[in-house]
Amino acid sequence: MREFIITPPFNDFEGFERVMRSYGEQIAAVISEPCQGNCAAINPQDGFLQLIRKKTEEYGCVFILDEVKTGFRIANGGAQEYYRLKPDLVTYAKALGNGYPIAAFGGKREIMSIIGHGVAQGGTYTNNKPGVAGAYATLSLLKSKPILKTIEQRGQRLMDGLKEIFEENDIPAVFTGYPAMFSFSLGVESVTCQRDWQESDRGLYLKLVEKAIEKGVMPDHDAREPWFLCYSHSDADIAETLNVYAEIVKEVKR
Ligand SMILES: Cc1ncc(COP(=O)(O)O)c(C=O)c1O
Image (cartoon, rainbow, N blue to C red):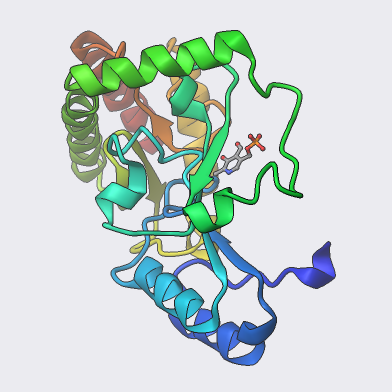
């Protein structure tokens, strides 16, 4: 498929515009995560997602927003609500089922209405009952309780506490993402794309992850994803994580 795909870097306004100027007429769809979530959690710069929306409208391409990570996590309405964005198609998974296997996509009637009329849709877990029941329960709870607000408040406390720890130890740290899904990159001044993140002090980050795991705290399972918070992460868990990080950041500095 590689020859049919063009991959401009995230947040590269000029690069994206150049691709659209050169190939816009031939491009079927533009797919983007709202926040790059496989390397820390890189936020879109102001206007980047809106530029994608504007250019895809201009050239008649489908704008697919990949909310697999952000959907039902950073707001009940995901990044669409957060950034007041109206893509043409959206993909969901992860938080939708709160751990149960489920994925979904949705979008404009004009596109969705072709399913079943010449376009088939199916898959291994399609209509998987535990997955659907998990999603139904998750969505009902999200609607009836301030779950994401609570996660946001706890996540903010965790981010603030970690920031303070790095400051006290004179280690430059750039925090990116959202309180429910954040990360930090060490030894750099800003992180707006994957290359910035790769240039951060990954060695130090990994050392901290190893030490944290030794002390029973594993916020980031493969040391490159964001820290995902969930509703059962209690105030005590936040306090414990901060205590462990205060200790291990001091240790790595020695
Ligand atoms: C942002 C994002 N999009 C898509 C996927 C792929 O999802 P699936 O495994 O359901 O194909 C992942 C998987 O982790 C993801 O993180």
